[in-house]
Length: 181
Image 1: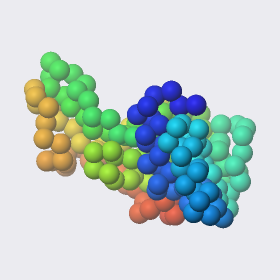
Image 2: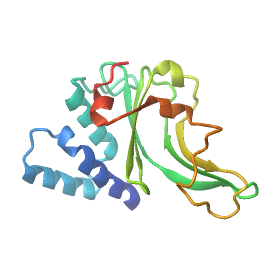
Image 3: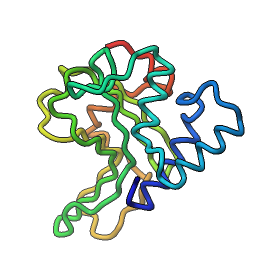
Image 4: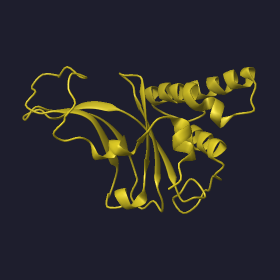
């Protein structure tokens, strides 16, 4: 069971977006019961994403070798975080961090949710482009320096340092699920 209430809330948001892909032959009544399970933490967004991607793509879910699917790819989910990284220097970041990507045998199917903007991020990242990472993969949405009070989020996009991971952004869930590495 999910232990953090805020995470459980996002499980329900994930269900609203992709629940019908995870359980494609379910009636409206059954989907409403499954959503109730997500709302109390019995169905987690990670499991939901894996089921939905498998049902949409035709890939099989595997349980071994650090990969979620039989094409060696791995699904990751995350919700954005806004934070002050260094109060002394006034560094602020809004990003989506996908944890534990090191050692995966294939491409990454990343599904991120930006809670303040109610916006989805779907990324397909080939292994050779992330295999140098030792921990997580951070998709920076916005960052500020020399800002000593909380910035006006959404007011700027850092054109000097565009996030290299956004070049892997896809249009929607279907495109992510069916992506071939």
